[in-house]
Structures are given as structure tokens and as C-alpha cells.
Length: 199
View 1 (spheres, rainbow, N blue to C red):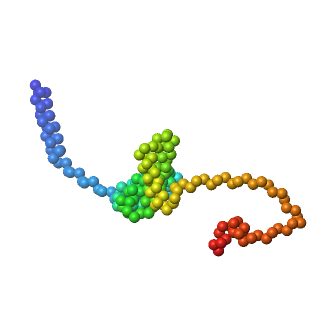
View 2: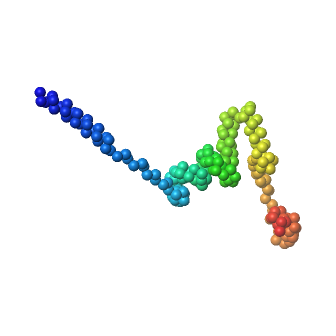
View 3: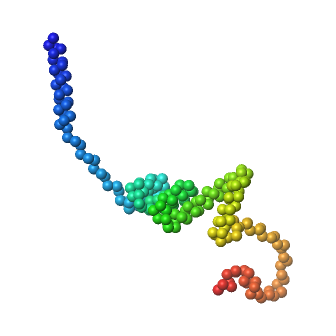
């Protein structure tokens, strides 16, 4: 009988102790905000990684800089340039668009978008042409865009035709040593150097 009486008392004592323990705990201090690394430090580390050939590590660091400093265009500029140089034109365009959000007049970003877009378009049109699927509205719209591109570039053709192969000349008989060489005319020398007349 004494055993049954002492168990409830022990349980009650434990409950009371845990209740008092919960009341006596002090609230934890708010977490201390850690300052992000400076943008210059991140850009420097990323540039070192890129120079060492670790392009993906560099892109990761630039993305950290872009996240920590969302108003800055420099990390996005580096990402766009790196992706462009790697031939990852879709990613290059996306990063360049981020640059333009921060600076709509950035010439490098606009250039990356234009050239990357043309390279992707050229690749896709070539694939469609090889598959004989460049027909209908796709063909018409491609022709209209090519015309617009020619007008913007001030060119009559986008891709000049290949230069014709040089004509094969018949070998001439060697002149005799007694014959004098005629003096070179001005037009003959101008044909040899097309820039001579500009001097």
C-alpha cells in the first residue's frame, strides 16, 4: 500500500518540477544578424576563381553577390559574360536581362542579348531547315525578321555568298632574258595594293 501512495506523489512532484522549470526558463536572445560579405570581396573571390578556371564556383559567388546586393548590376554582368563565353546563350540572355533591369542602357548587356539571340535563332533555323520543317508561318516570319535585321545592320544580305574559287591560269612560257621588262603602270600597281590610292 505504501508503494501505491508514493507513486502518485512522485508523479505530482515531477509535474510540479517541470511546470516550475518551464516558468523559470529565460527567453532565448534574438539571433544576431550576420552582415553579408562586402560586394568587392565577393567579386574579387569570384574573379580569382574564374581566372583559375573554376567558372562554376565564380558564378556561385557572383550569384551570392547578386542575392546580397540586389540593386547591383556587376554580379549579373559577370554571369552574363561568363555564360556567353561558354556558349550558354540562354543563360547569358537571362543574366543580361537582369543587368538591364538595373541599368536599361547597359551596352554590354544589350550586345550579349542581341548576339546570343541571333546565335540561338541561327542554330534553331538551321535545325528546322535540316528537318525540312521551315515552312508556312515560320518561314514567313523568319524572312520578315531577316529583312528587319538587314535594314538595322544596313546590309543587303545577312550572309555574303562564298567567294568564287580563283580561276586556274595556264602556265606561260618564260620570257627570254634579252627582252626588257615593260615598266609597271600605275594601274597595275594600284591593282596590287588596293589601299595605295588612299594615301
